[in-house]
Image 1 (cartoon, rainbow, N blue to C red):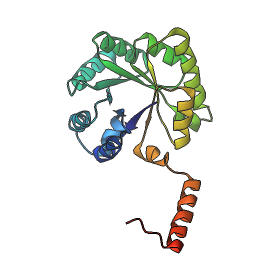
Image 2: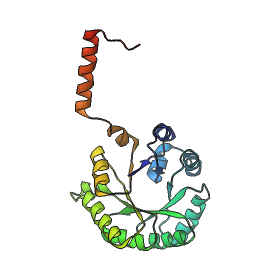
Image 3: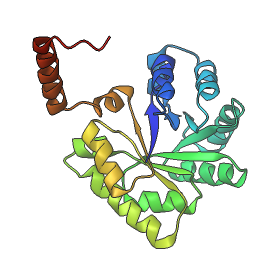
Image 4: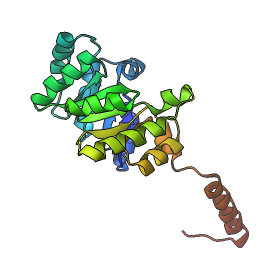
Length: 217
């Protein structure tokens, strides 16, 4: 499973990239706002740092405006994936950009039917939102499984990009189900390394090393 980092924090991306933990980046207007920087400037810097797809989201809601905004975003770098919402106009914009050879990430997916439409429109990525479904006491992972089954049934090439990841369990669950990509905040990716038994074992090893007077260097 590929790891995308869901942030516009350059320092956080750089740290994870150095460890080989970054296959791409996803951004959205909320993350750009949090960065406090111009969208074109920060997106360009991310694209220069990361070789993989960098999702940059339109803010328009109608087709014509989405095409104008998406075309402008695509000029930033060759690895831009234009992010459009899963609306009818968004699907039309997806088809337009796909026909012109541009990567497209269709976001805010909450049903298998929506994912099927996005695949038919040629989306490069479909972004089902796990955490937001869980917030409504619905099973976000069940949606990932449903999309996986449908795409496999018909050989759709659209990649399932598990989004709205809230915790480390979401990452492993998405991997087991067969999501192609998971995008998560840096803190969640860091949390994947944590386990209480690892900490307990290290505490015991360190204590025993001190008792034994062990020195490596």
